[in-house]
Length: 539
Image (cartoon, rainbow, N blue to C red; front, side, top):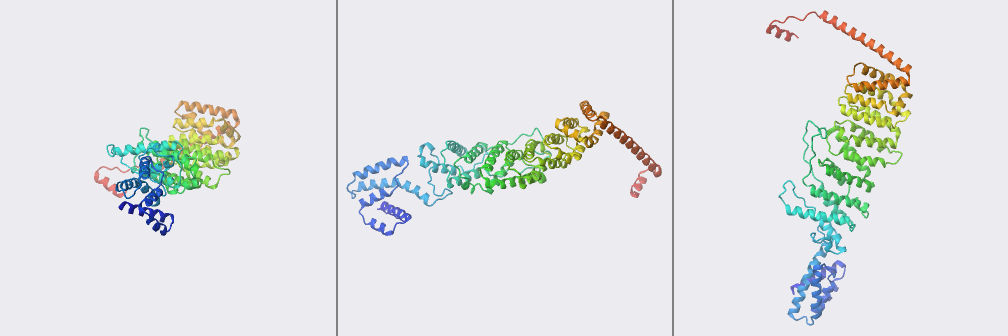
């Protein structure tokens, strides 16, 4: 009777859950045992797993052969059949009182392969496997939790294959489980960065650091990317879980020293930006804050190049005319990125972003060049070469009107580069002046530009130590002479006049110092330590 009392309680629970009255249950209790068993078996779910189908078939056979319920053997057999179905009822209870984030999901043993369950149960099995993969293990010790790590890796590979088969359907509970699994595995704190003499990227011999947990992290990144690329994913539902907090923690992962992880993050952030339009302003603001903190506070960040690579494609998709917010990102985030010492790590991506802005709105080029002149390097020749290369790209896109606004400060700086004692800087500046479009701009404004740079060319011909620079200087002078011979002669006359004036001023300065020295008289003759101490004290 204990078995029947327990099953009666289950029937009561099921009836009360469906909203039936207590009277219906009371009437059912007055039936004889045979009728009660038939009702119990009818109320139990008929959709069973493979392991329960065999028991179900046996129960049907035994119930059909049973004619007398008072027979003890037959009654015991029926109770055994009913007990075998209690596992299914237990599974149903999880859908009524969920214990995890999978509200309304029928939980299935996560170790079961996807091929061993029906299509209707695959989604529930998918959630069960996601919950299992939320466990985190320590990879610093390779001999610790080896079996658990192998099991988790196998489950992660099954999840990747399941997503690749396009069989997944993402309900809200599935999306929640997915985001929880990714957050538990990916979001972590990195070890502190100790200050060193060289920032990352300045030392060519510095090798990247690889995460020992990459065998699992790579699969989790693959799962997240496939999840975001799924066509059936409802962005309106997913944005509740892929929220601002999730995106901020995702951006923090760009601090990883593992280049493989940053490469995966690059693809994922680009997909998030493309799929969730509501998050785009927040992503731009968060990336801008990362850049500003890098430029003005830390000057240490491992993922600036990857972030700029993402924004290169983002900028190309900006609508015209450019919004004020987009222009502020250019002038407050991208232009100051020319300041840090580690510019060489991300200069190629930075130049691409700046050029994309100029292609969108050519009128910005004058302000951009002024920004470059503001951050122009004085003591770093390698950075100066990068600036000259970027400057040439920008000048190829400038029109005459914008060029005339910035040509005076620009060619004062170029003149300094032409006479630089670093032969690579001087060569690069001469190559810039030989550019066809830049020569065209110089020719139309030669009355202003040629006096600014002619003195640098003359100084090179007189005293520069590098023969290659001397040859380039001769070529540029020849080009200018063909352009306007009279102006070249005029500039040469002014240069000689300035040289004579400089010599005269230097001679006057020398004579002034001589008079001061004579007026001061000879220094006192200090013959002993006592007199020296007295002289020092008097001073």
